[in-house]
Structure formats: C-alpha cells, structure tokens
Amino acid sequence: VNVDEKLAVDKFNVDEANPHIVLVDDPDPAEFDKLILCCPAGLYKRSPEGDTSFDYAGCLECGTCRILCGSTILEKWEYPQAGMGVSYRFG
Ligand code: SF4
Image: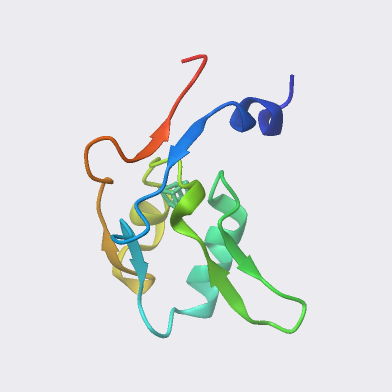
C-alpha cells in the first residue's frame, strides 16, 4: 500500500464557511515553492503558467506549512472547529 492509497481512506469534513488556513495576498514565491515540495497532501500548487493555488480542503493538519513558512505565506493557520477537518483511519 502506498501513501496515496493510505491517504485515500481518510475522511474530510470540510468547513466551507470557515477556512482554517488562509494565505496572505501576495505569498513569497520562494517560500511558496518550499510548500509545493513539503506539504504532504500536495495542496500548494503552481500551474505551468506560474499561477499559484491552495486548497485547504484536504489538509492533514500536520503543521508543516506553519513551521516552515509562517507569516511569509500564512495569514491564518488554526485547527478546524470541532468535528471538522481530517479524520484519520488506520491510525
Ligand atoms: Fe499541507 Fe500540512 Fe499545511 Fe495542511 S498543515 S496545508 S497538510 S503542510
């Protein structure tokens, strides 16, 4: 079983009205590129045209982006409200 298959069994209850992670308006490109490599859920992306995107919906709440980049990228990083966010399976 590879990592993608393991991640696929987790459940996400997405709080559409209240993102638990919000990026700054103009994220530092070099810092953003770190997160393209380091976010284990692959939520930080750059298109072939160079446009960046981020989707908090699949967040694993690992805190990597907060520790690596802090306020250079993040305006807000909180754990989701109770009952929201990721539910891990198989530990
Ligand atoms: Fe990705 Fe972890 Fe940051 Fe969530 S907390 S966006 S999984 S690096």
